[in-house]
Image 1 (cartoon, rainbow, N blue to C red):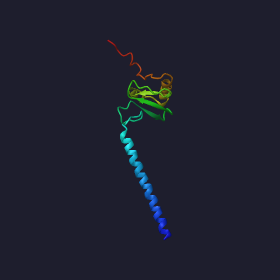
Image 2 (cartoon, rainbow, N blue to C red):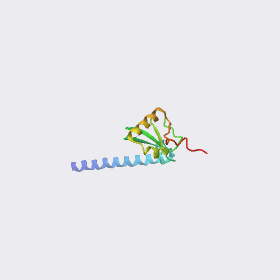
Image 3 (cartoon, rainbow, N blue to C red):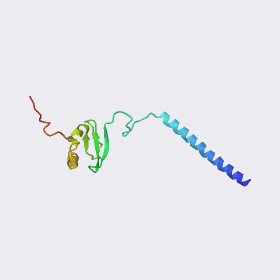
Image 4 (tube, rainbow, N blue to C red):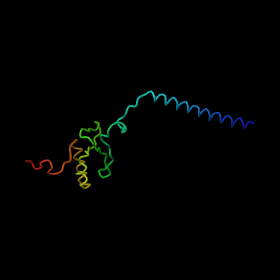
Length: 124
């Protein structure tokens, strides 16, 4: 009979934990249901994606790939910003050329990669 009491006590304590967990879950749902959803800086479910941070294996560094011209990384985050319209030019560069461009972008934030000769095209 002593064995039965022990088993009964264990069942009761397990039920208590289950009741506590259910109560906590209920309180959590109530608390979060009352608060409106406030998107965070990393919440991509809210609004358009402006830029993504990429860990580049070629460069051995993190970089930003920006989809908007007005993207500006947070102060204190000295990462190079590459823009979506540069991708077609960058795709034809060697790894060494990409590293040189990366160094230039670190030295001159917000600089752009342009096609050679594109800025002076034929004018009439």
